[in-house]
Amino acid sequence: MIPLFFLVTLCLGVVSAIPMPNPSLDAEWHEWKTRHGKTYSMHEEGQKRAVWEDNRKVIELHNEDYAKGVHDFSMEMNAFGDLTNTEFRELMTGFQSMGSEEMDVFQEPLLGDVPKFVDWRNHGYVTPVKNQGQCGACWAFSAVGSLEGQMFRKTGRLVPLSEQNLVDCSWSYGNSGCDGGLMEYAFQYVKDNRGLDARATYAYEARNGPCRYDPKNSAANVTGFVRIPVSEAALMNAVATVGPVSVGIDSHHYSFRFYSGGMYYEPRCSSSDLDHAVLVVGYGEESDGKKYWLVKNSWGTGWGMNGYIKMARDRNNNCGIVTHAVYPTV
Ligand SMILES: *[C@@H]1O[C@H](CO)[C@@H](O)[C@H](O)[C@H]1NC(C)=O
Image 1 (cartoon, helix red, strand yellow):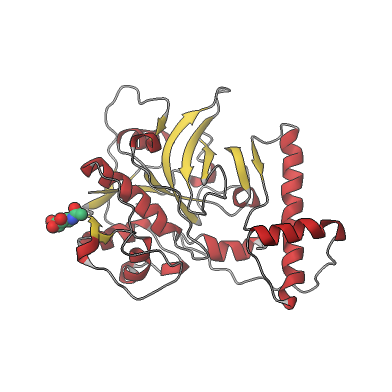
Image 2 (cartoon, protein in one colour):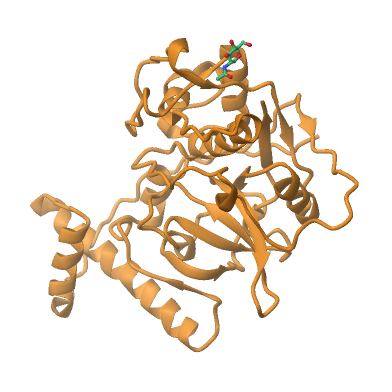
């Protein structure tokens, strides 16, 4: 049996006492607001500034340690700098981790060696990085990512698929639009619906809307889905032989939100408390022998390494990368 997990919905924190801003950061604050198009009411400004200063401090301390060789990855201020961790979780993740009763389990092929390096971006399987906006539809982006890859594998055509179609139309399968969902429910919807529209004809809106699926614009079908056994060797095998795989992860930590490059490893990560869904598009190994999963996120190209992150591989399922891994069959 697959263990059951539930998304914990947290309430927005109430900020009581707002500390005075540090005047030496005034110019940097204004520059950051301009760069990310942020405008606040008088009422919001003080609270947002305080959160931004706290986040800035976390990043600064981490990077001081990084410079000393304590960490293998760096962090940077980005568009998420004015959100508390709780707010960020509400807005930007949205993975409801729970098992489905009926599913196929990946049967590992009896191969000799799988390649040491795999990057499906180099073989046409992966669409450009997208941005979920302030909507917890990570599950839809993750599901669409593995479906785009499997459709390419079958047809030789890479067609960006519509996350909005999933956000709007798969509620009766257990998904909750911008409040979270699960890739398996999305695949089941596409299977029963006998189609999923292309992104070009059903654009992403980052909010819940009425279902506007149009079979004329369908660009994908699903026949089922396959869960990967919880083992890094099995995931490696699946990625090497099948293509990009959807995974759930624990993304709760500041280190993930402000990741900017290098090998991500978070000792505080949970392997079972998953809150975000992403796409494993490959794996590899650095010259120093450190192994990684190559992961596509849905937070735009301004985050991480042009929208990607290298997450630690074979380090005891760090951040739960193999806990909930699935791909569709087409
Ligand atoms: C999906 O399956 C239906 C029914 O078999 C078929 O008519 C349609 O062409 C398929 N669509 C795609 C995009 O492959």
